[in-house]
Amino acid sequence: MKSDAAENAGLDPSRLPVHAAVIMDGNGRWAQKRMLNRIKGHERGADTVRAVVRASREIGIAYLTLYAFSTENWQRPKSEVKALMTLLKRFLASEREEMIQNNIRLQVLGQTHRLPEDVVQGLAEVTEQTRNNDGLCLCLALSYGGRTEIVHAAQNLARQVRDGRMDPEDITEALFSQNLYTAGIPDPELLIRTSGEYRISNFLLWQIAYSEIFVTPTLWPDFTREEFIGILRDFQKRERRFGQVSEQ
Ligand code: IPE
Ligand code: IPE
Ligand code: MG
Image (tube, rainbow, N blue to C red):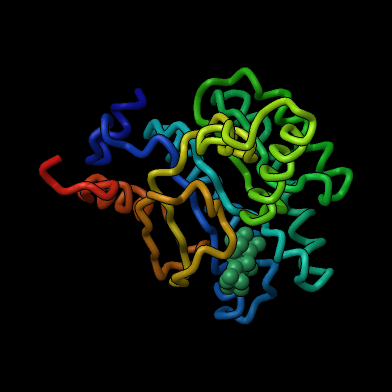
């Protein structure tokens, strides 16, 4: 069924990204263009999340990481942060059943301890209820910052060296990766950013070393399953050289 959906979409199932990551940007501008409150943009953005999660599952992508809230986003007006947290709770409540039914595993990346207690609780529940699912892994980057993640990994490793459990020379790229929030998750081959901004905004700094980057001018609430599939098709046309030459 999975490869059928991919093939029907004109995709080669054997050349899909295992991991796709998305910087979901442009909710505020979507709302402002319509003279609406920014929060309306976030609400519509949640509908796009549903559509992209569903498409990823059907097509057979193994990991989908969505940048939902950055460490920098804590500096937004209190009312917007509060509304985003309420939306997140609502999203968890409404999607829980579908995630269980559809074999989706939820994983959270970020400084979860900074999130409100009830959100932490909701995330922990759904994570636990879906932990044995082996379909799509939906990774939500929440209160996430790439630099913080790297510093956190360095601290873990430094502690182990200090305690005499390993030597500095034992620290390899693989071991470093295992100390990131994304431990056990392959690096994303594909990174999408909506709303036309050509920047990374502190997202997955370590993991995107060799990701193919696609920036679309579409604002996140206007992003569709069709556009997502179009990007996957373009991804399949790109040649990933990893520093080598074509013939290799
Ligand atoms: C992305 O949309 C959602 C979050 C960062 C939470 P924005 O809220 O950043 O929308 P713009 O960039 O202001 O349009
Ligand atoms: C990046 O978007 C963070 C998320 C999508 C959650 P921002 O809107 O916060 O990033 P900047 O401010 O444009 O860099
Ligand atoms: Mg933005």
